[in-house]
Length: 109
Image (cartoon, rainbow, N blue to C red; front, top):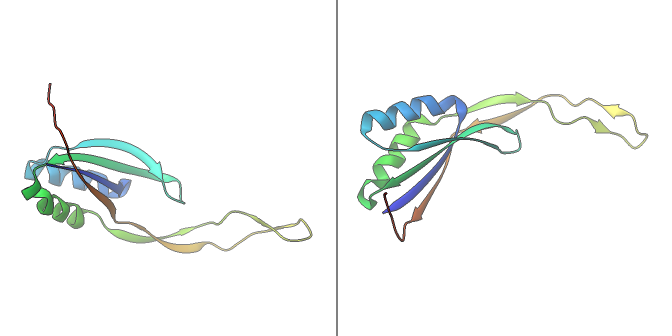
């Protein structure tokens, strides 16, 4: 048995949750935040048999997309102490970060 932790951007979370339901994958969904953009993410926790890990990862890949967005960097101060407004920067966000962990024991009460 494996434990899959999949961290996806909030924009992809609903579609991924629907795919899990359609494919019969049971997952716990947590609202999380992180990354340098400090934006919302969704973390899915999935306990799955070893032989189904690749299927779950395929579902995650299909539903999680990267996209580009502009972010405003923090205001900078120059040597004289005056503020300099920086131009927005284009960054790639989204996709999924997936961890697959071995499960030593599983109990269901």
